[in-house]
Image: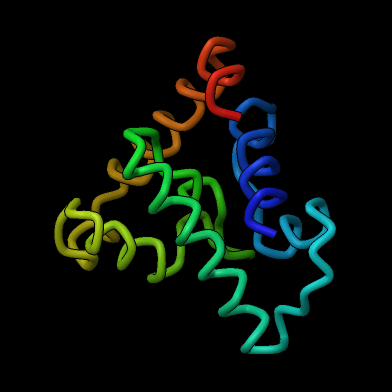
Length: 122
């Protein structure tokens, strides 16, 4: 599941639709999960967090910045808590700083639209 989610998020970073909702991610990555089921929703959140933790450890941008909560323009609290764990600062401060999420998204797009990075790290 991690591989499919990661590849889908890289496609989002390279494409025109710069964000993806949890529901669309489930559908497009053919995960077969149900967001109404709290266990399955938390499982997807854990997968997305794992991917971003590995990307961060490798010096690459956080792919989870591209996944938004449906009906919101911003990430849910889980994203900002992940960023706090990774050393970006207090999750509450990060959530209030609209520039932070925009910078994370832009870093993803720039990194993955570079053909050299795409070929090397996909």
